[in-house]
Amino acid sequence: MTAELQPYLPILIPLIVIQIILLVTALTHLNKHPKVKIGSKTLWTFVIVFLNIVGPVLYFLIGRGEE
Image (cartoon, rainbow, N blue to C red; front, side, top):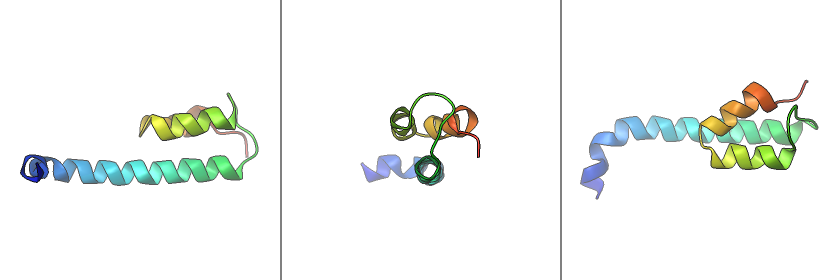
């Protein structure tokens, strides 16, 4: 199985690192700020965690509350 994934590793590793960085950054921001623009903090937590790269990006574009 490892031999089958070998050609895809140069693409997969950066995507996984980007996903983890976005996930941690979005969840940290969500935790530190009391309000979100749309929805609730619980909803955004699920969106961030389960929608992979798209969830954190959506949070930063439309969900993040005013500073």
